[in-house]
Image 1 (tube, helix red, strand yellow):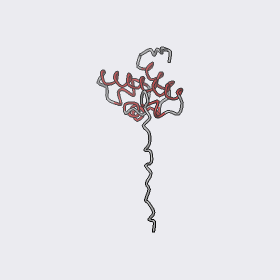
Image 2 (cartoon, helix red, strand yellow):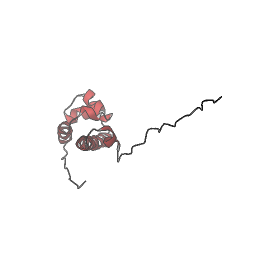
Image 3 (tube, helix red, strand yellow):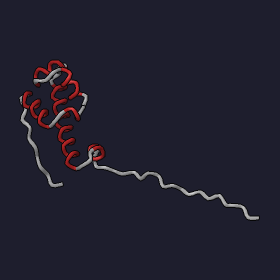
Image 4 (cartoon, one colour):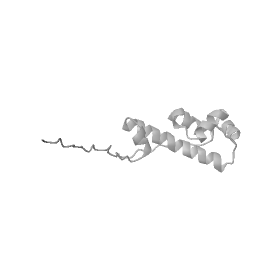
Amino acid sequence: MKTAKSTTTKKAGPTAESFANVWDALADTHEQAANLRARSALMRQITNIVKESNWTQTEAAQHCGVTQPRMNDLLRGRVSRFSLDALVNIATAMGREVHFELQAA
């Protein structure tokens, strides 16, 4: 009498995909990732200015022409709540000029 052999197959686990940065991992397209990187960079610079100036959120909001809750979103890094246009306006209200540099990808 023959006995049935138990066979098991190993399933390949998920392969790890690597990305140049977190924005590439989160975005659906290269264009979206570039936009997220630019917004994030502007937000970091604005946050640094607020910290260096020792402003409260209310003071920073007044300097930037936004509400305190909006400033809170910016300082907490909520990138999805800000467009590039809005961030340029905030930086300009702080007396800063925004410059962009294009580099070959």
